[in-house]
Amino acid sequence: MALVSPSILAANFLSLGKDCEWLNNSNADWYHLDIMDGLFVPNISYGMPVVQAIQSVAKKPLDVHLMIEKPERYIQTFADLGAEFLTVHWEASTHLHRTLHAIKQAGMKAGVALNPHTPVELLSDIIADVDLLLIMSVNPGFGGQNFIENTYHKIEKAKKLIQAKAAQTLIEVDGGVNTQNARKLIDAGADVLVAGSAIFGSEDRDAVVEQLKKS
Ligand code: DX5
Ligand code: ZN
Image 1 (cartoon, rainbow, N blue to C red):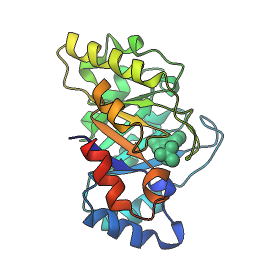
Image 2: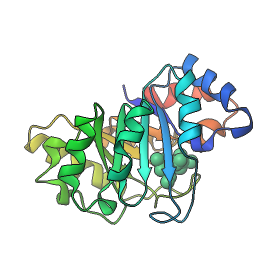
Image 3: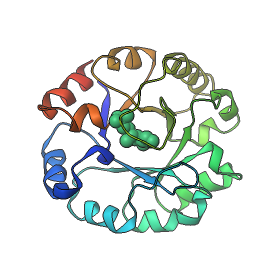
């Protein structure tokens, strides 16, 4: 059964407390928090005060996805904010090995995200150090975009690499995930499904979470 990490970017910010309460009581597994800086991606989402407010009520792990330049600047900040997983982009981190170890040193699990154009093979020398491999299935920056079909193939390649290196890395997929493509994503090797609009845009969020998990 897949883990489901609802993306708070698609929640209703006017009643965020209510949406957090729903997530706490749902069968969803993590909180997916998208942090954007307007540089690495062409959009700005929300920052530390919002993460802190969510953390104060969250009863599930915070899965923080940093879409920011030089993410190493904020490792301690997100550790202090209670992140369990801190994911940085391969494209945004020059000294990725050092960054991953600094994340672990700060007490978090270390994630690496790959943009759609970035090949999985680039992680072959570092995969054993990666707790979470986040495969972007849209170009990062916005919720509600269309799923990129090449993702299935990319997940299969990631799974093979993880197995070949006997690593324990979880594969997470993010962007355009819904009840139609979940089954194929899990069959390809995905362990964690991020979903924003598919969950928060639905009349029956619990049913969507159930369908994603049981796909
Ligand atoms: C996109 C973000 C995603 C986004 C997913 O840059 O990383 O987490 O919120 O939203 P949906 O599921 O609507 O594509
Ligand atoms: Zn994300």
